[in-house]
Length: 244
Image 1 (spheres, rainbow, N blue to C red):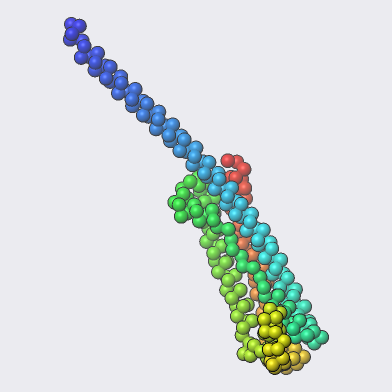
Image 2 (image 1 turned 90 degrees about the vertical axis):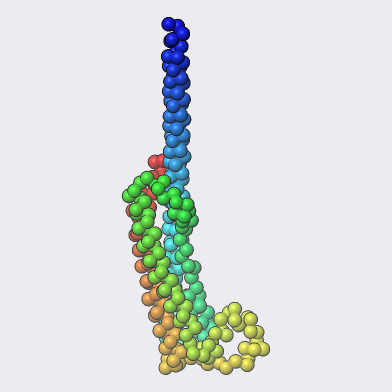
């Protein structure tokens, strides 16, 4: 009888060993899954805070560029009055005109969202409302950036649309003036079109200044629209970054 029960005991022992191994594997998998989820939640929190930092940087840049647009508007308006008064030298008008055109390009900080999408980690963002708003925001942002670039290109085209750069006075730009030197400048023709309201250069310059005011106002509108598009997503990011 004792000999007959040995196989049963061995079978029970083997089954017990198998059960323990299975339980051990399940526990290990559970711990691994828990640890993986913990890492994912940490990554998710970091992503929310990094995107928020990108938004903060963009808001600061937009504030600076908005001021630049206002500066261009005020400078152009002053030049229109100076042109009409005919009491300013052409070199002053032209260099102020160039200053009114200079502006920095808005390049949004998209490092984090680009990293998330390119690495296939968009699924780590568990807040679906925020994730959808982020996608929508960046789509709208690209549209507004395109409009800003068109406006900027049209403004730059105006500078080089004069049929005779020398008669208009490109040599009066400070950096060109220094590069050419007095010996060459003395050989170039001088045309004080700023004193002749019937001159085509006078009229084109006047038209350009009004155009710059228009384009700068459009820039301000685009910046305001970017900030409006940002509001909901920005507030969600602040909430998620603090809570996790």
